[in-house]
Length: 254
Length: 161
Image 1 (cartoon, rainbow over the protein chains, first blue to last red):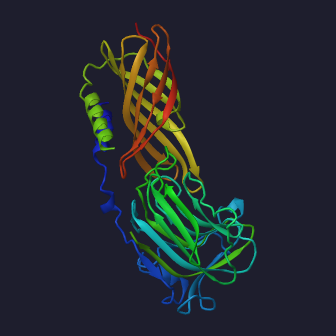
Image 2: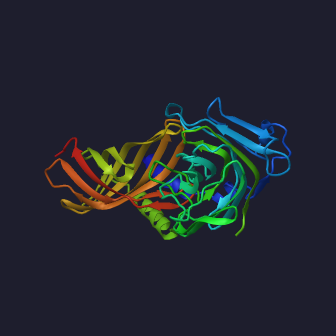
Image 3: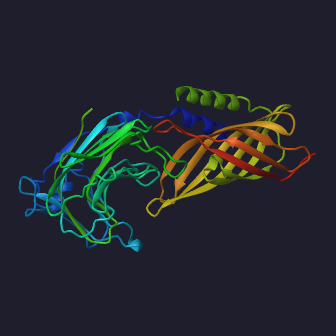
């Protein structure tokens, strides 16, 4: 019985040095020119990319040499629409074990080419996430809803929308430059800015940009992001979508 | 946040070093809505020390929190040491403990539920009611303090004279 009292005490003393334990790179860039096939992206254990997410057999990930923004190659992802019985349809590349900490400002830049003009409703193009002991990878996502970009959160926080009356659509069948700058904070002292072809379309100050633990549903948040994901990170629209991504760059700017 | 953490350590030490004079008194089962188990919990409580104005109760709970298909359901086992202060029916109820989280997919985590509340436990009755502020402290990786509260109804299993 007495050991159970010790159990109450001991764990209180073992809080870890999280910066040391979860250290990792805070920048990465890729123009996909050095790859001949898709599997080369995840060779060399996290040196480039870490893993693929291809949740449906008919989804496709490939290196494309026909449509590219620079250097003759791009990353192509094709994802079927989500069928409820099978879970989210994903066709994406992930890089894990990175480290973006609270109070830093992270800049993510990439060129996207979204093929066809079929309606893109809840098409997710980019995720900034952290891996937790318990919970479903909380983070921030860039989504297309009614063909317009917005920022959505995988923790309780409202979406960041374009100003009413000045919304712009994402152009289709052409390359579009998307930049997102996020000042990271677990309190309401962060901010988010998104530019589409150098036009500021989303801007939110005094914002919680990092997740916190939520009772026993989400446990183990660290005040950081550790993972980036590009491509069709989820296709919840009613149409199959093909997305090309090129010239990805992510860095800490402040 | 550091002062909260120090206070927590102080409370836990205080409770641990006062565990002399064990007593076998009544045992309770209780249902807590929200509180230390998250959305709610079933609990078993028994006293380990009874003095004139202070009683220490050990509490073992069980709760669940569904997450999603990939992560399964979180099974939660809150274990708390309750300190009841007060001679009569109206008592101050302080608690500190650990909550073990294990998901059906095999993930594990620990957090520290705390409680500070009012407990109404009338003499010669077999129930108690408790209203508590029940913050949950995450401490393993990042120190986070979550505000939370709970209401408990407990029923005494046996009554020794």
